[in-house]
Image (cartoon, rainbow, N blue to C red; front, side, top):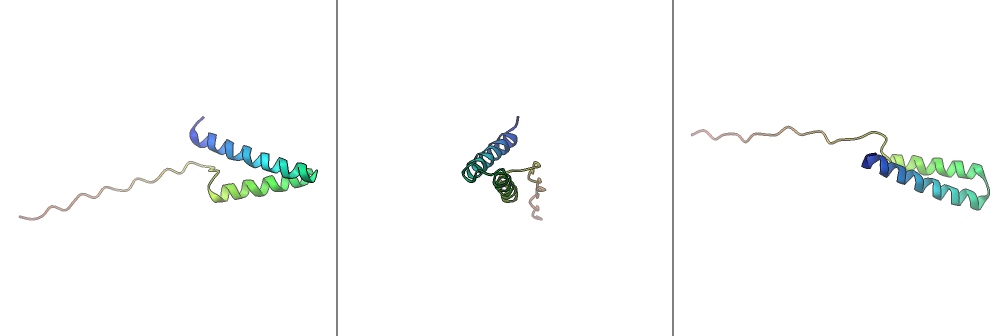
Length: 69
């Protein structure tokens, strides 16, 4: 498993733990599902959970212009 998958699973585990605490405090499965959905959506939107790899595009190298003699 790559680093991106490990980070994604750690973020998702954190989301589920927080949602479980809030849902358990409210004693409601509905609150658990709503909180986990909201936290997962914000983590994806914020870029913490990356669904697809985003490799930086290589920039073309510029060759210095040669001076005329």
